[in-house]
Image (cartoon, rainbow, N blue to C red; front, side, top):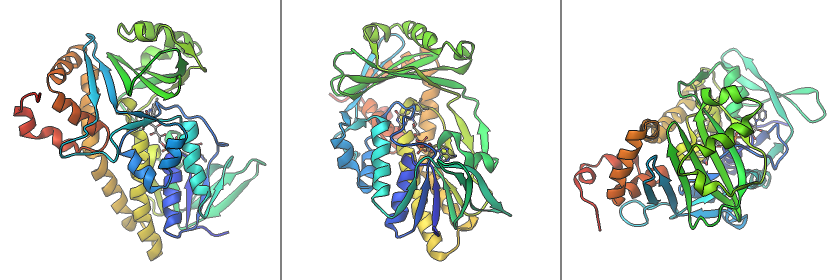
Length: 403
Ligand SMILES: Cc1cc2nc3c(=O)[nH]c(=O)nc-3n(C[C@H](O)[C@H](O)[C@H](O)COP(=O)(O)OP(=O)(O)OC[C@H]3O[C@@H](n4cnc5c(N)ncnc54)[C@H](O)[C@@H]3O)c2cc1C
C-alpha cells in the first residue's frame, strides 16, 4: 500500500494532522505504539480556543457528549492567600470560540480524535511502534516499524510527520532535541472527595511549586503538582510519599484537599521542558510535543498540538499536491508555527518568572485583584483567544478599574 504521508503518533497532534490530510484527499498511515484508550500524564484542561479546532475536526459534539466539564475560569491563589477569580472575557473586543474551557480525561479525548481519524481514509495501526527512520541523504524517506507480532517492516512515503510526543523518536533520530534550563517535574493523581468546584479550575502558586486542580469528571479531580526536579530526584522510588509530603507544605492548598481520597496511583514526569530545532532534512515535519514543550502552567499543550497540526496540514497539503516535500516547501510551516506561538511563549516565560518568586507573585496578584479588566484579558491570553499584544496596550496600563 502506498501512502502520501506517514504520521508517527496518534495523540491530539497526530490524529488532527491525519484527519486534516485525509480531508484534503491524501492517503495517510498513522502508527501509534499504544493500544487505545491509553492514559497520558496531563492536567486535562483544554483552552477555550481548542474548541474551535475540535469543531473543525468534527469531534466537539462528541467531546461534549463524553462529559467534558465546562470551566468558565480559574481561581488562582497567590502565596500569601490572595484569591483571584479569573474569568474568560465574554464581552469586549475579544471573544473565544466558546466562553469556557473544558476539562476532559485524555483517555476519552484522544480516543475520540483517533476514532475520527479511523472514520476517514486513514490507515490507523495501534500497537505499532516506529523504531527507526529511513534516511536517504538529506531526506526522510519513510519509517521502520514493528507491529504487535514483532518483526520490523519498512514503509515509505513522500512525507513523515513526527507527532510522537515528548519521547519523540523522530526528533531524536534527527538529532534535534535540546535540554532546557527550566528543570521541573510534575506529579499527578486523580482524587475524589474535594466537594464543589463551581465552574472553575483552581491554581495554587507557592514558589517554587504550583498545583492545579481540574474537575475532569463528576466527583473526579486531576491534581497536578509541579516542583523543581532537583527537589524530587532524591525521592525516586518514593514519589508517592514525596507527593503527599509536599502537598502538605502548600499552606493554602492543603486545607482544600486534606479530605481527598486517591482514585489511582501518583504518576510522575520530568524534566518537563525541552527544545526541538527545526529539521535539516526534507520530507519531515514535527507537530505537537514532538516540536518542543515548555511548562504546563498555562495549559496550552493540547491547543498547541491541534494548532500546529492545522498549520502543518495546510503546508503539507500544498507540498504534496506539488509532489515536492523539500525543506523549502515545508519551511512555511516553521515560520507559521513560530508566528502563531511566539507571543504566547513570551507571556508564559514572563509568568514563569512571576510564579517562581514569592514576593513577585504576591505583588502581581495584588495588582490583578485591583484590575479585573486586566485579569480577564490575561485569562483570554491564557485561553488562546486574546492576542498577547493586547496586554501591552497603553490604554490598559493607564486605565483604571472598571466597576
Ligand atoms: C504534567 C503535564 C500536564 C499537562 N497539562 C496540560 C493541560 O492541562 N492542558 C494542556 O493543553 N496540555 C497539558 N499538557 C501538555 C499536553 O499533555 C501535551 O502538549 C499534549 O499531549 C501533546 O499532544 P501530542 O499529540 O503532541 O503528544 P502525545 O499526546 O504525547 O501523543 C504522542 C503519541 O505518540 C505515540 N508514540 C510515541 N512514540 C512512538 C513511536 N516510536 N512509535 C509510534 N507511536 C509513538 C504515543 O503512544 C502517543 O500516543 C501537560 C503536560 C504535562 C507534562
